[in-house]
Amino acid sequence: MKPTLYIFTVLLWGMSLAISAQTVTLYEQFNGRYDYTAIGNTMNTVENGVNGICTMLNASSANLSLDNNQNIVAAYLYWAGSDTGDFEVSLNGIPVSADRSFSDALDTSRVFFAAFADVTAIVLAQGNTDYTLSDFDLNSVIAPYCPTGTNFGGWALTVIYEDNNLPLNQVNVYDGLQSVPDNLTITLDNLNVLDNENAKIGFIAWEGDSSIAVNEQLTINGSVISNPPLNPANNAFNGTNSFTGASNLYNMDIDVYSIQNHINIGDNSATIALTSGQDFVMINNIITVLNSQLPDATITLDSNIVFCGDQTIEVFFTVHNTNSTGILPALTPITFYANDVPLATTSTLNAIAIDGSESQSILIEIPEDIGAVVNLVAFVDDDGTQQGSVTESNEENNSATAAIELLSISDLIPLPNLKACNEGFETATYNLYEALTTIDYTIEDLQFYGSLEDLESETYPISMPSSYVNIDPNETIYVRMETSLCYDIYEFKLTTENCPPYVPEGFSPNNDTKNDWFNIQGLYDIFTAHKLQIYNRYGELIFVGDNDTPWQGRTNRGLNHNGNKVPVGTYYYILYLNDSDYKPMVGWVYVNY
Image (cartoon, rainbow, N blue to C red):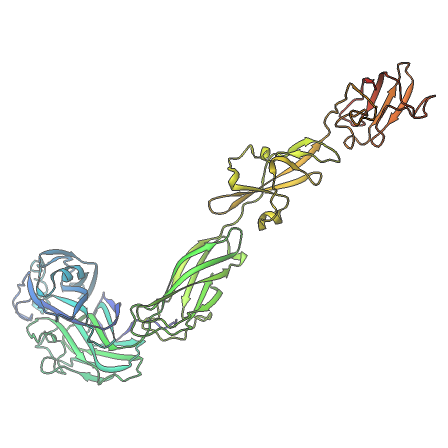
C-alpha cells in the first residue's frame, strides 16, 4: 500500500470562463485482457454556428459490431447538450435514467449538462445491433444558444470488452465535465508502463467545431498527437469518431489516439495537454489502454472468533488478487490496526495468481484501553508503518474494516446465601441448587466451583452439588452459567448454624455397642463449649461432662464418684449449651442395662 493518489490531477492555465464543472477523475478500472470501443451520434443536423439552423433531432442511431471473441464486460452511456439537462432518455426503446450528472457553463446564460448511465445489462441483452437514443429533445431550450453557435446535443456508448487474444492491459475510465477554453493540463499519475505497444488514449468531447481550428491540438508528454486525416494535428475536436471513421458527428467527438511512441517503458506518469484558442470544447470522458502486468492486492475480513472474557481474538481473512494483470508475490505484508495503532503483522504465504486468493487466520491481542468495541482495520501491502513493498495497479483498495465486540464477563452476580445445620466443626451438607431459586437455569448449562480461578479455567468443578460438604466456614461458592455468547458468574456464601440438639429419652450402657452412651445428637463438636450435669433422684450431682467427656452411665462426682456404673433408674440432666441463642435444656433420661 502506497499513499499515491490514483487520480487525474487537473491544472487550469490562463483565464477560464467555466463557472461550474466537475474535475475529470477515475471512475472505473479494468485489468486483464481488455480493450474498448465507442459508438454514438449527434442530435445536430448540421454543425452549429452563428446564423445556423436552430432545430435538433430527438433521436439518432449508431451501430455496435464486436467480433465473436470480444465479450462485453461493461457499457456506459453518456449524453450531453445545451441547457440544464434532460436526464430521462430511452435506449432502443428502454427507459434510461441518469445515474450521475455533470454541468459546465460559459456564463450564467449559457449552461450545459452531461449525464451518465450504466447500461451494461441492455447491451449484454441486445449485443451487436443498431442502438438508438431517443426521447432526447432539446428544441424547446436551444433558442438562446443558437445565436452564439452553442446549441448541441449528442450521445456516446463506451463498451469495455474482453478478448483472450489481447495482451494484459489496464483500461482506465475517467469522467467528469471540464471545458477547454484555453489550456487544460492533465497529469496521469501512478502508471507502470511495461510495454508501450498499442498504448492508446481516447476522449468523448462535446461542442467542438470542425470549422474552428485556432491553436487547437492535443499533446502527450509534450508531443503533439494526431490521427490524420481524420484528426489533424491542428484540429483535434472536429466532429469525428476514430473507431468508425465518421466525420459528421456535428459538435461532438469520439476519438482515440495511439500513444505508443509518446510514452516509454518504465514511465510512471504521463502529461496530457489540451488547447483550444477559440472553440469552446468540453471533455466528458477519457479512457487509457496500457499494457500492464501488475497485481492488485485487496483484503477481506471474513469472520472472527471472540473468546469469552479474553482480549485475544482470532481473525479469519482472505487476500485477493482480482482485477489484476500480474502475480501478487509471496510474503506480501499484512498489518492489522485499531485506533491507528498496529496490533499484528503477518504476510501472505504463497504467490497469488491473477484472480486468485489466499485465506488465513491470525490471533490478535487487543489492548485493554481500546475498549469493548474494536474497529479493526486490515491493510495488505503494509509493513506496519503504512508503507508497502509491492507496486499495484490500484494502491487505494488495500484495506478492510470490521467492528468487533469483545465478550466481557459481567460483574459477579450475588445469589442468596445458604445456611445449614452445623454437623461438627462448622461443617454442613448443602444442596447447592437451592441457591438458584431466583434464576432460570438448566443443569447442563452450569457448574459450581470453589474458586474463581477454577471457574475461569474450568477445572475442578464440584462433582456432587446436591450433597456438598463445605471445606471452610463462610465458604464462597461460584457458579458458571453458560450463555449464548459467553457466561455469567454468580456467587453465594455457605454458612452454618447450631441447630437445637436432640436429647434421647434413655440409653443402655451394657457394652453391646448399641446405645451405650448418652448420645445427644447435634451436640458434640457443635456446641463445643457445652456443659452437661447429671443428678440422681435425690438431687445429688453425680456427673459433669463437656465436649470431650460424654456420659457413659458412670459417676464422676459426689460420694460415689469412683466411676462406677449408675443403677437402673431415671436421672435428671441439665445441659448448658453456652450459646446465646439457647437456654439451658433440662429433662429426664432413663438408664437401663
